[in-house]
Length: 134
Image (tube, rainbow, N blue to C red; front, side, top):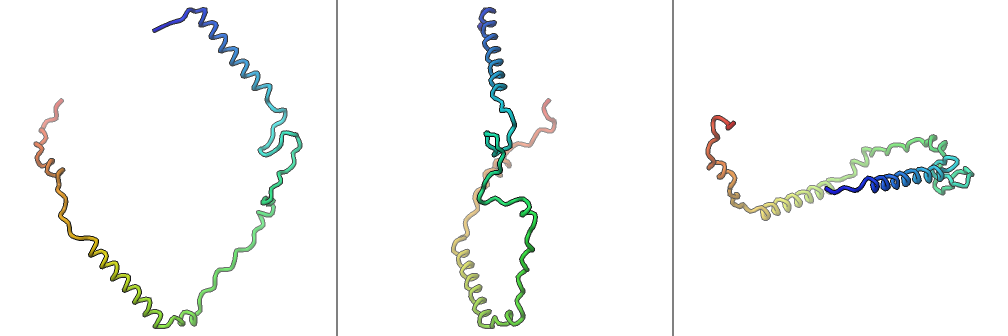
């Protein structure tokens, strides 16, 4: 391990101290006279920000009533769905079910299960000792 003479260490300590005091002094010197809110200009005039999409807080508190819930269908509208439309929907659902079943039959051929190499290793291990080693 290397070391330096004490005179050099003192000079380095003085330089570090001067830098610390100088940084503190510059920070104190550059503090603004009066604190500002975010968005206020440094000029001193505290005018409100001009935003095109801004809404005063008072208007936000007054809310419009919620829109009325959608009206439920009447019995006549529900009865308009004829048996032909229902039969067409059922035929479409049956065709989709047949297509899915055919795709599963083609996509999933029976494959042999993979070999259980880990199980073979476990079976060949000797039994653990009755007393643990201390």
